[in-house]
Length: 225
Image: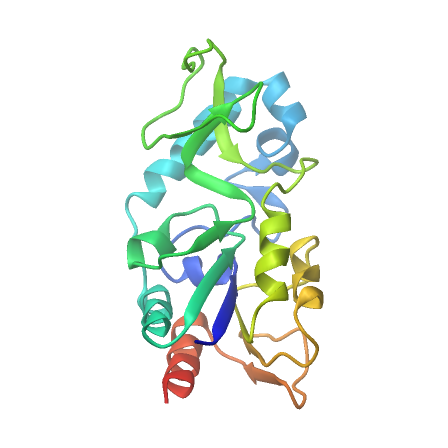
């Protein structure tokens, strides 16, 4: 059975109504990202950061997987499929995908501020005073600017063994995620779905200059044929 690696970003979830990472002015819901998405921001104002992610969590509960999320699940009928996502939402899982690697963490989980290996399912508001069994304060299980990407090694191992790559909803311009395709075997077929593609088509790169839902529909139909 051939193996497909699917790299997804904000563009696939935006069509479900999940707000994208930041606006054109660099603000995220009116906040400087350095205030709400860095270890320093958390140290300076933990209540602000916790509240910010509580609002993101509430918003995530109001949306559902879209047609693109669901069609990617159909590939599992004929292929071994790994999804590697830069998104912190759980829409791939809710759509039914069985193997999802989150490069930047998961909004519906929390972790210890002192031990990043202690991770807990967390679907409600997270407040100061919410601690684990070791009396450690809990924080969002999200990779902030300046932090290592712990799932990067796993993602590299997946790409090293892939037969086909699908890229959807991400420009593949931001590192370290942008460098992942360099680990795939040479001339691996790539299906790139983006309304404004950042790369050009070639013998092994197939460009679909459209949004996630329509592009994924075409790619999945083609591969299942």
